[in-house]
Image 1 (cartoon, rainbow, N blue to C red):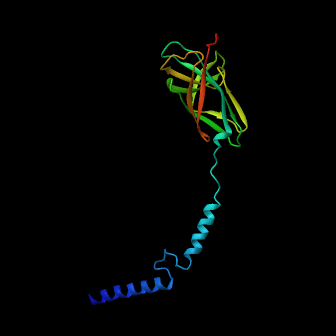
Image 2: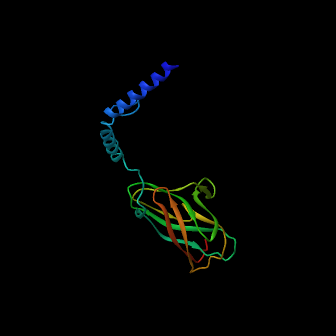
Length: 180
């Protein structure tokens, strides 16, 4: 029993001696003399990592956002706008939230062999240095189950979420309903 106790005391003294001399106390620990160098190397490596790719929110602009008037409630109404991406990275319109509608959907028009058909899509692509005009015959957003009348001449604010540029508030004007 005395032998085990002596081995533990000797190991403890050896560990204290190594720690005081700057040597590592275990195989996974750096000697104290190398720690400042290792810390500096890690800081240098962290600083040289490439920056994450994301668009500057100011590189994306939304203009002429409008919808058609609807006097019935609930109703579905198209939301049109022009999105310009002046940045160097492609972006995507992911979501639109409008306080005047219960839901919104991003849609595109398929021009097949028959009549054009609208279908929901996950996102609307916005190319770098490009402009996308949302119209009835291309990409557009649908305001579904409106919660109030959309009277011509009124305005409301929606928020659009883009993959890289983040959230952008959009002022939407209500214009007279077209006859098409």
